[in-house]
Length: 107
Length: 122
Image 1 (cartoon, chains in turn blue, yellow):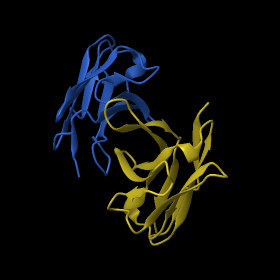
Image 2: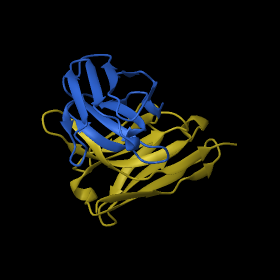
Image 3: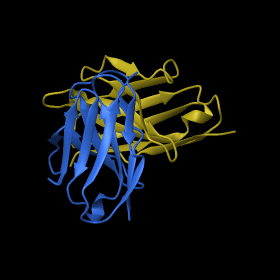
């Protein structure tokens, strides 16, 4: 199975901050990487596919990059509604696996 | 509006069984690949099982293989997960999700239900 490791596990940031979350795969997954946002008590929301492509309706302050084993999710200017947990997920092979999540909290 | 609504969760004793349902509206299960993903309390997301567009090809995570069975009913536009031999570690919120092919690379889960809670306890 491909292991996905996110860092940090949590971070504190202020509104307006630039936030970067890292996701590392245990083997190369090319660009087969997705990102999701999950707010407390809610289902995950699909944000980014194929490492760097925004799903329809996702604000442009979100961006993704990377290829191979190392990926990043960046929020250019954190908004109040962005405080949530973020998960990366690989679609390179089965079983599909997720990172452990990065919780973005209010500073 | 495309929507998935899970049901069937509850409390069950170890070794027991449950059948989860996921009713789709605004989308066709027949035309979709679907999956079940679970989340233990306070933990991350874990893919359990998927069924392909053809409704024939299925896949399972090793930790549920032989115990869980995914299926669908096109007439009812619904997805199911039959869970047998349940263990305490199966306690989780179970989501159904639609899997779509994405441009360039692979696929993703674009629509999720709200989840149904399964508690396995004696």
